Length: 444
Image (cartoon, rainbow, N blue to C red; front, side):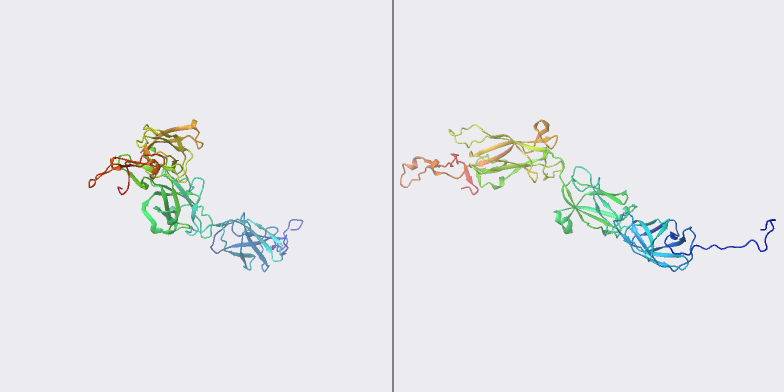
């Protein structure tokens, strides 16, 4: 326009301002064509980058040489490869196939090495679908496979993962899981020999805990090894079957019983002294006689685990009539009083004693429960006599010993031809125990 406000002929004019055409690193940058970029681990995908100048103008000039790098944020140096394709209109297609899920930092550089600025890039790679090959048993705070017992609910967890080991955290796959927990003969049988798995099963429920975790709760009243077969979409997940060990529950003294070596008796008595014998031994100055107690829980499971909060008290006396009269007397004697035994490595409670006096020993067996693992005397919670108490142990006389044995009767001094005569041989062992009435298993 002129000063008098008259419009100049052909005005207004059309002006075209193009984006800056320099390729100096400080003059151009890239931005994503979409505000948010997503991809799936292991799935080939691509996104578009737009070249802009330093003022934010879209550039339509192509033909430059660039390199693109995708770095996983917090991924310990993991980078995904990418291929850049020039679309000849100022845009470039970036093709990629990352296998690690997470957020990636996208960096673009001239082939010469100068790094360019990038704007509005939020590349997120999502995990792929759940894969049975990578999904595995997981130990979390509330789902730890230890301390399992028949007393209550036992648990372990499963963590869903895709084929590349990425955690699948969306949940919702519970319907694809199935499981069976069956008893087996031993740990090795649970894992390797499916034919050793019995028909006895544990009651189990699987639930979606969220975040890609699936919890398994199971209960059983029978202790032992169990094989947990976990399947996803009809096929076993990684590591399945899992070996689960269920321990016996809280001790039930009223169902616990003594045990010993009664079956090893090489001699028997022609009297009633061997009735209900738990263990047998032989009179000796050194050899021990052993018997013990195996505790069980309320379901009858033997407690094989070692315990520090309970023990068995053995109060043992003898009421044998086989003592040598005039040498030991015929009254009962006390062998030991209130001997205590803590559990052995296999959970049994054993007491050993040595005696040179043959006869029947009777022991009162009491289960003592402590308030804590120290088992201090002042902290006893209570005691209960076990089933089968008192228990009887028979100590047999030792082998005949000639210097203490004797013979008597008329047959030793007087006999008549053709008429049967007899005399009596009274045998004793080297501890002076009377062996009369003791016969061997064959009746000799």
